[in-house]
Amino acid sequence: MTSRQWGVMLLLALGVMIAYADRTSIAAAIANKPFIEHFRMTGVHRGLLGSALFWSYAAAQIPAGWVVDRFGVKVPYAICFGLWCVATALSGVMTVFIGLFLMRALVGAAEAIVMPASYRWFRHNIPERHTGLAIGIFAFGNKVGTAIATPLAAWIIVNWEWQAMFAITGLAGLVWLVPWLALVKNDFPRGGQLAEAKRRAATVPFRNIITSPVVWGGIVVNFCYSYFIFYCMTWMPSYLVEQRGLSLEQSGLYTFFSFAGIAIVAVAAGWWADRLIERGADAVRTRKAFVLAGFLGAATVLFGAYTQDLGWALFWNIASLSFLGLASANNLALTKVTLIPPPAIGLVVGVQHVAAGLSGGLAASLSGWLLHVSGSYDLPIQVIVVFLAVGAASCMILLRPEWSPKVESAAAG
Image 1: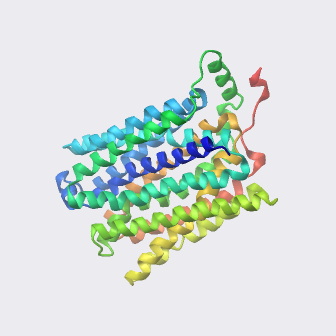
Image 2: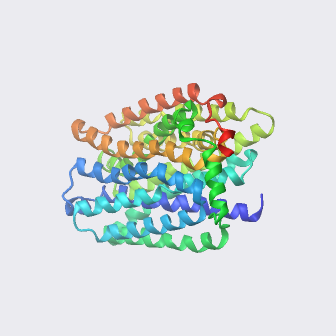
Image 3: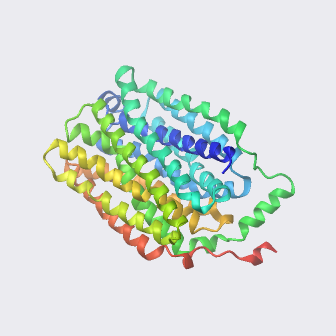
């Protein structure tokens, strides 16, 4: 791998870190009483606001994948990046709930470009023996973004106010565009290149993608994996404040530990799987084993829900999300790179990340409703474990190489 490859890979990790920081900052806001009172929000309103980004994110995934397969990575990513940073900053000037909701939805739609563009670049620039580590570093970026966003947002809110939090977290990210535009090779097709890009993308028709068991397996696995992640992104600070009695700043600190744990484990697990594959282990079986171990370990979140001891509750809160890191890089490598033909990477990732967006919307809104009707976080946590079991079963049954989307050579003619 060249220094330019490493540089772009690190920029992609930083880009997804900023994206997740911008989407996660809302968790600190909806745990803040002045913010809640300003918009006169109930638990249902808080759930709707937390889910706004994810619904638009899901809706824009397939169009985003279609765009990067035909128009490259550099230019579409740059445009969307600037758009979501500005929308995040504008959230701080909204005075009514519907305005804030729409800004969060705009952030989600623009962030839809991140995954299709990033995984397309990985598939075309990183060899299989380095894929786990590369995607582990990428996954480290989104987990670190989540980890630092909540305590940082909480600190800004406590020391200034929620309006400043949105402005700072939104505008600071724009600095990223400078190295991106300078370092990344322009892959925007020109003239005859556009026709060639369209021809390559057409070798894997959409019908082959949508009928592939591997794609559906990836949809289910990513939905179930993401449900736990997005629940923690949206509701963990509120859970720690309201059910465990921590302050807002303390909740941000423990949220940081949880996401730092999954970030570190994701990189280590991706590197470990790469080493096993390099020594001759089957890539699909190896990565599936890590995914299953991660889902099983994450189910320990249930222990934290039922213990009365604060120390153990905090321990399992951190440990369960950290265990899920065993699945992070290996799940992403398996369902978005290893089992997917190169011409269709963007569109397949877009299709699969519809599930991720829907899981975020459902995790935020369903958990808010379950909290509203039960008065406790126990029921939302039980639902997490159910989804983890479904995801593990789907991984075992559906993720098989022979069920990958088929390339039709005739389309190239």
